[in-house]
Image (cartoon, rainbow, N blue to C red; front, side):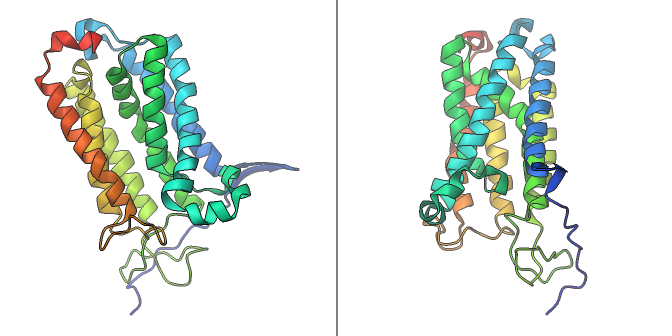
Length: 279
């Protein structure tokens, strides 16, 4: 059975700029754009006093600049190592030289999440700032980077969806002859755009930054839901030990995110606001 209508994969050249031996890929531009825009957005949040308890943000501009360096390392190193260890260890252990070839694609969100979480705690300890408030700022800005990251996956023709007979199928260059769900675009929408609006409500309507951990908890809950839903349409990683029955490794990795998110929302809502500034 063939789809009613096929969307045409745009087949964008993954190389955005090429000059002699130098080439800059859309993949790298997408990650750089997400990190820089996220940094600028965090700077904007800390210059909005009404969002903070006592009108006092936890970070200065100088500290936000330092945070960008920490998060860049977490995204790149954690994302790559997460792909290696969480999703495709057999391939990378058989081809170790491929591990450093980040420009070819293959970045794990969950690996980046773990690395960034650890680095936030190190950052908070180093500069004596509240870790939960730093997490809230990063989560508020992260949908920007997630959106551009998923668009980069689409351009790179990676992490495509399952074979489909629906009208929205696409034939990806390296996905075989059969049409597949453009699941990268589903994730860009739910994990990026929708998450952005949810975070905006959490920070500006609910004033969640006044209760450290609340924004992070909401972020974890929605990401776990959105990613688990998108995994229904995304081709699962081959031979992953956490592909259990009908559940994919991506869904299994989201379960602890959901539980931690629920706990953080519960803890943030029951803690007195007056305790927040030192939490």
